[in-house]
Each structure stands twice: as structure tokens, then as C-alpha cells.
Amino acid sequence: MSADQVSRGALSLDNVVKIYDPDGASVMAVDHCSLQVEAGEICMIVGPSGCGKTSLLNAIAGFHEIDGGSIRLDGQPLCGPARRQAPIGPDRVVVFQNGALFPWKSNLENIAFGPVAQGWLSRAEARERARVMMAEAGLAGYEDEYPGQVSSGLRRRVEIVRALINDPAVLLLDEPYRALDALTKSVLHEALLEIYYKTRKTIFFITHDLEEAIFLGHRVVVMTARPCRPKRIFEIDIPHPRDYSVLTSKRFREIAAEVAEAVNEEALKSFVRGEKEG
Amino acid sequence: MTANDARPSLNRLAETLSSLAEAFRCPALYLAVLGYALMLGFWYLTVQVLKLPRFAQMPALTDVLKEWFSRDPAYGVSIFTRIYYQHILVSLRRIGIAFALATSLGVPVGLMLGWSKTFRDYVFPLFEMLRPIPILAWVPLAIIMLPGDELPVVYLTFLASFFATALNTMLGVRSIDPSYALAAQCLGASRWRIFAEVIVPGALPFIFTGLQISIGVAWFSLVAAEMISGQFGLGYLINTSYTTVQYPTLVIAMFTLGIIGFSTSALVRRVGEALMTWRTRQLAMDGRG
Image 1 (tube, rainbow over the protein chains, first blue to last red):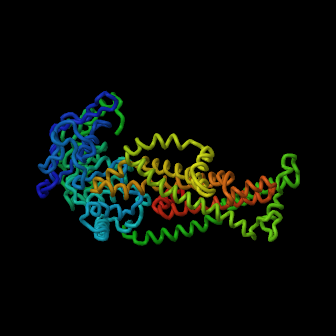
Image 2: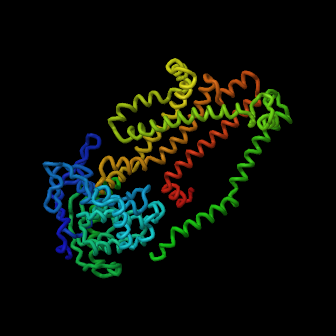
Image 3: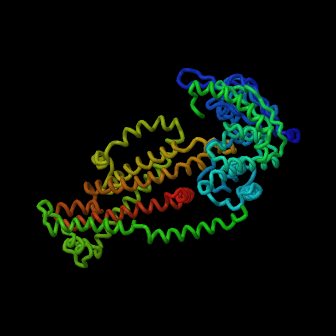
């Protein structure tokens, strides 16, 4: 839909393979997984616990090497046969499951960290820019508080701004709202969409929460139980911009029922095998 | 979100008010006084009132206090004598030098142990073999190795302190959530910046726990070393008062050690709190302040 306005942030995964070898017994986490994510798309990845979704995200971020296939960002190879591990960098910023704001830096300093570390802004300039971005995101007043002093919902929003200040091509979100209550989540979902409508960043978002997936995503990719590969891809034809009234619409319920069926099959397989959550 | 501007100053006001109220309401102060009273009362009762058989030689509470605050002490050591402060100063100087050395070496070594696997593989096995050797076992070697009275004492004090600081610093680095370093890398930080802005501040709470332990064991080994060698110092004072049967002086030296040891610990804790406002505020928010 809006993706054609955006020229940056197309991810393409081709036959990605990831094998773990914990104690001699190799475990295939990702098996010939292919997926195209358009520039400016919100792509939601759902799948049973321990299916290897996070392995996929870690491969894109460059935290792990891959054992086969290739990953490209806007046509440029990140990793593949020639280089098995993608470089870690500010074009693909990860927002972590449990949050990784530095507790010893104020919210403002956390946000200003990236541009200073990369050397394209001085500390004073970065702080000024961070201040503006916090105000735009409705976070004014919390600049000098430490992350430990504010609510976990607010921390998540600060962390998104900390990623966005670097103007990344892709945001990689690894179940960022997992530990939050439903009310906080719904506020954060709308806040994330609001930010998305302003920036149109490609968002690669892993979640367990089907409602979250359908509400936010242009597409919902349901992954198979381990090894992980797309089982079904749902185009969510509810027009953006969306708000919370969407949740009670008939179309939403129809899609939710379909997605739930696809996920349940896989969840059952994974449950029977006793996969560890991850 | 518009009322947020008022938040920090309101917070501060609320903090001040509640801490004031706490000071009056909190039973900690009364309980502390009661604890002291019980200990001193037990001492007075057993030695001076009941005169228990094994306590016959014990210096009496009133004798110790009289001696301590006497302008003309019977055994020559009270708060009005120059020699009292000389002992304190000599001990403090030794602690100061040893603790400063142990910190300035122990923290970097600990950071390296936690940060670099290669360094850890080289050094840690040796470290773990040397660490359990009790400080008293080092005394002969310290005296053989180092000239004079002063150096062996400082060396022994340094040694115990160093191991405590280095080990806790290493544990501090190892306990940092790896997400922080990955996040910093995502944001474009170099290895050196990650070290300076993630590893060091992340390990700081453990470093200061280490320094608290380290200052404690420093006093412990200082007194042990001063009892064996040295000309001055509180440990020396304890040992000589024992051999010359000046028991009130012995107890004065013990109490003095207690007070100064407590103060140095408190000083280390204060410095830590000042360097880690983020942590004290977080703990306060969690109700553990």
C-alpha cells in the first residue's frame, strides 16, 4: 500500500538455513526459509515457541552467522556464501525482547547514543535531536529520568525512538511487548503505528500475539514449527491508518480465525515436541 | 503527557518529604540505640556486676571509657594524647596506600578478566590458585621479600584487597546482560566505546560491592600484619597492649578500629551511590531504597 513511497528497507531472504550444534547433535532452526519484505512494509512473523523466529531475526541483525542461503537488504548482500555473518550496524536496529535501554544513561542520553557512537553528530547536537524526537513521540518530560524510573511501556517507546534516531532501513522487533499487559500493549500499538505513519520504516516484527500481528501488519507470516520456514502468508486487507476500532470489525475477526487455525496446527506440533520457549 | 514538565521537581519534593517523615517514623534509629545499649549493658553486667569467673581479667566498661576520654590516661593512650592519633594515622595511611593500589590495579585486571577470554584463560587459573591462600600465610614471604617494616604491611593489606576487587569486578562484567553490548553494536558503537560506555558502567554495581568487601578485608589484613611487624598502627597497639597487660588500651584500639572501619566502608558506599545515581533512583522506585 504505502510501501511504494519508500525506497529503502527491502529485505530479501533466500533459502536461509541455520543449524545449531549444541552438544554434537545438530538442530536445524531455520530450514530453507525464503521471504521478501517490501520497503516500508510492516511484516509480522508469528509461529510457535522455539520455532526459530528469533534465529532468523538474529541472522538479519548480524548476531549469528547462517549456514546456507543469503540475506539481502535493498539488493545488497548482507550475508551469504561469501560472508556467513552480516555486519551489525545501525541500518538494522534491533529492539530486544526484554528491552536493552542502558539503565545507567538517562532516556535522553540513551537516544543520543547512536549518532554520537557513529560519529555523525556531536554530543550536544545528538542531545538536541533526541530532545526533539522525544517531544514528537510524546515523551517530553522524561528526558532526564533513567529507564528504571519510568514504566515499562514508556521504556519500550524510548527504545523505539533510540532506534529511529539512526534512520535505520529496517527495524527488527523481537517480541518487544511480550511482557506487557493488554492495556499497555494497545497504547503501544497505536503509538508504534503513529510513528510508522510518520517514518514508513520497514518493520520486521516477531510476536506470539495474533491480535497484535493482525492489527499492526500489512502481512502476517505464519511460520512452521521448527525448523522454521513460512507456512502461510496472510495479506491483511484492512486499510491503514488503523486504530483500535479495527479490532471489533467483522473482517478482523474473519482474518483472526484463519490465522489462528494456521498457527494452532504448528503450535500443537511444537507443544507435542516440548519445545523450550525462546 | 502535558503535565510532565512538573514531574521531576514534584518528585524531588515528594522524596524530601517522605525521607523526613521516614526518619521520625522509622524505628531503625531507636533499634540501633537499643542494640548498643544491650551490648554495653551485657558487658557491664558480666564484668562489673556479676563478676563472672572467666571475665575477671576483662577490662571494665567504665575503666575503658574513663581511660579513653581521660586527659591523663593511666596507660598513655586516650583521645587527648598525640600517640593515639599517630597510631590511627599510620594505620589509615597504610590502608589508604594499599586500598588505592588494590583498586587501581584490581579494577582494570577484573575488567580484563571479564572482557577478554584470552586474558581470562591465561590469568584466571593462577588467580584462583593464589586467591584462597590466607593472608597470614603470606607473612613470612612478605617479610623476606620486602625491606623495612612498612612495605610488608602495606603489601599484605594490598594483596587481600586486590583479590576481592578483581574478582567482583570480573563477576560484574560477566553478569552484564549481553543484550546491552549487542544493542550498542547495533547503534554503531566501536568495541572501545562498548567497553567504556557499557561494560564499565554495567559492572559498576559489582565493582562497588567488591570495594566494600575489599576495604573490609584490607582492615582485617592490616591489623594482622601490624600485629606481626611494624612500629605503629592500631594492630600494633592491640598487640603491645596485650603483651604489656594494658587491657583498657586494647579495647580502646578495638573500638577505634570499629569506628574507623565503619567510616571507611560508609565512605566507599557514598562514593558508589554518587557515581550510580541511576541505580539508587531505580532501587528507590522499586521500594528498596
